[in-house]
Length: 255
Image 1 (cartoon, rainbow, N blue to C red):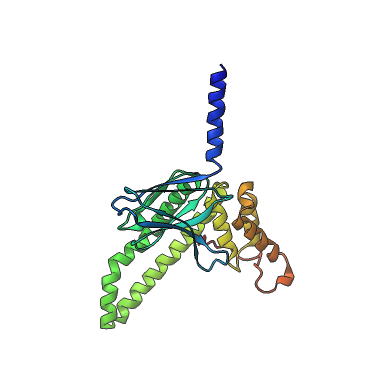
Image 2 (cartoon, rainbow, N blue to C red):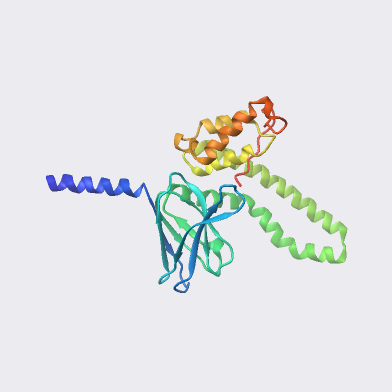
């Protein structure tokens, strides 16, 4: 019986410890040994990227360990590859598979917020599909029209594209709002609300409602504190013309 109790205690200890740190188990198939992978995040001023860790690829694999106090967006830069791979760094076991030929095809799994990040992006891609299909279908036609100065075709394509853009924007805003309402524990939700506060015409009451619905753990993150500050500023007339108006319709942009 004592052995069983000790075994259970050890298991609980290991599980609790794994939640207090992160382990990124990475695969970089086809990448030469010794190639560098840099993990980056935004600097304090939000004006650039700051390297926070560097590892070498060995036998097509890499590993990064550490711990953080809250989730945040990070990037992986593979030496010699074009582009950076975004993911959410948070405590837990994260699995990343890098595609050296096309970074945007890389995959991340393993923690709640990264799984949500992937699913959320997949939903946005579905919303934007019509717009992307239109661009692919009409790019050659537009190029020809510009070369021949065919203003009738140019204006027609621009009008159709503009209408599609408006539709995508409307559907995206609905998605942002519905997601935050139904995913109060997702880090994506607090980022969406923070993006909303950057719009001077946003409905501050809606921001407050969405923010109040968030899990307590998200309210104390950096984005959460930034939202609280924006709400406070919006309610202070002395802030000036830059304050958010409580009477205008809301828009959302998580970027």
